[in-house]
Image (cartoon, rainbow, N blue to C red):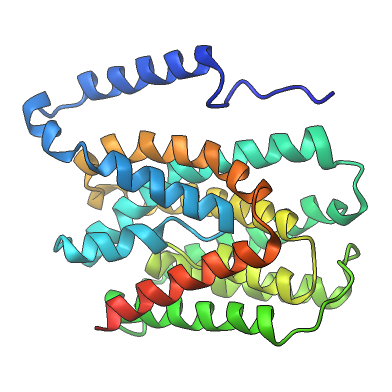
Length: 289
């Protein structure tokens, strides 16, 4: 029997500790509680964004950026605040997925490349992301337009993988071409993440699905790579974070990140991919409209 994680929603001790820490965070902030009360609904946004992000491998920015754009945040505030919230949600998801791997999947053949995928893609992603910040490379287009097209293209490619690719035995072995692809995905995805707060996780999931790797392993690897990437990014953009939003959306994202694995284990691979694709297409279409 696998050892249960302390960080789970069914553990009363964890819930009490979580509420105490969250209350302490609110009370220690420099904002008046009456002012912060106006932001309480962002808890729901953080929870939904993290459930989506950690059950598909996509960064939570897929949910946060369209909302922040509608609220007239500046591009810098949108990106920075999205990174900050993801530091909560993607970390909770990464811890949950890593515990799942260590307790249930270490001996499974389909997960044998899990740690190597994370290491190679993460290193490349950090290099790509830092290159954008250090050399101040601007996004090719404005944030709403870039994000919308990025979402539409990803959604379209996922639909293709569902209906055009023939059923194939799940792959477990990594080849040289996979390592080359992961380096390129990390470099390009890291750069895109610096511009949009999402990118590397989505691209990694798409590639692993196209190569017929186990979908749960693909999602888990993408979540962990994304978590490390957003922590690397937040140091560069923390001055633009809208902290009033993060104080509510961040803890909400922790709850969503912990719940996400449950969603994945109860959905078939096809339903999960359709769920992912439909949201991407919808958010992209709304952005372009």
